[in-house]
Length: 190
Image (cartoon, rainbow, N blue to C red):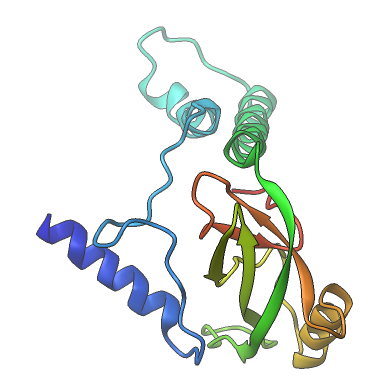
């Protein structure tokens, strides 16, 4: 229990570092945020991808593969893994509801540059409120964008397109845990 609490505290500190708007957690307190995979395909794909490189060196069957065969099997493993990830995301987010919410605060921030980065990356954090089944919720939805933004103006333009002038936007909400939300559209790359 102590390890789990420390891991969760570390997750929260890292997630909130450098942000004025603090993340509103959707996971149980004192438990690390870990999504358990329900689909073995990503794991199988990675095992195939890594395993093919060890096949020739450590094979008990003394069957050697050509370079083309190794590449074909490795790429197949990656394809299986990617399809598994997409399928897992659809499984995880099936049954989520798309609702109207009001954005009451927003923050745009530049991420720290890593050594070797040429351009800056920008992100956003929102606080939204909505009502579901007669109960009010205040959330910090996860961004749905896969790519980061290269300027503050790009983030502002994106948010202005997705949040109307009255502050209303669309959220995808997990009805089993309404604090778990995604801004604008479902994520598909989990």
